[in-house]
Length: 304
Image (cartoon, rainbow, N blue to C red; front, top):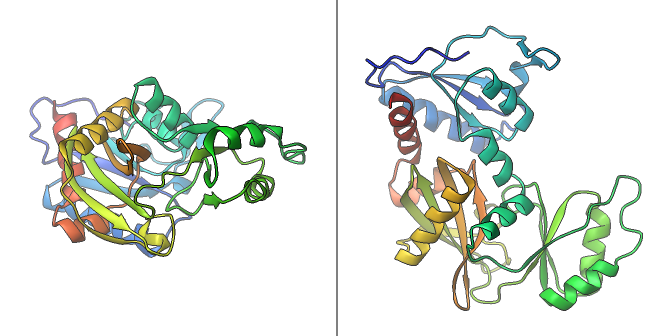
């Protein structure tokens, strides 16, 4: 699946594979795909779209059940971790790497990684593992977590996007209900950051540089996500915010990322690091072509 490297290339005849999810064909994903394809065309790069459902393998031997065309790179805009591992095993270079995507897609692993690098973030407790059909038959751990984090607290499913799997628990009973409802999904419990409720900053990082940022504000919900009713505007991050966003992307090994920051009492805190962050709203508000920046970074990286 991977071409042999050609040192004579200037990057303009590179052929790439764009992988997106078969089952997420919402307007937002369609527009994102169009932006990436258009940017590749402007840069003279070939980009072939395939969905994860079209890229089947025999896991027993690694044989692809599709025409194994030669590509210089894969822009892996999906979270199908096992597919990414199979493509990587076949010699294809993924952007982002599947190891980085796997960490970023799991909020618990993300916070463990950020903590290992000493980066500031809200107090975070990983909910203990339970199993389907069992759930939580006691919540003694919640009492200890509540004593440490206080209420309100934020509960997040470890896998989720657009703020859809993020919940606010004002009381112990609220938290208990959320945990019982969503178990056995892996979850984290976090302290509620009281400063600037409903506001965050997203810094878009590409190739070790902060290319643009927006501030999102929501007067009706503690979640700042635009999908939850937030309003975004162009924003110039401080040097501290920029440095923190760059450090987070580097810690996770991401070539490009949307890094979300909260404003804590003593400075910015890392909220989330997104490996597949949508950029249409960011580009519209800042005038920065994130799709082109991503593909330029890939072209430069592969051409080295």
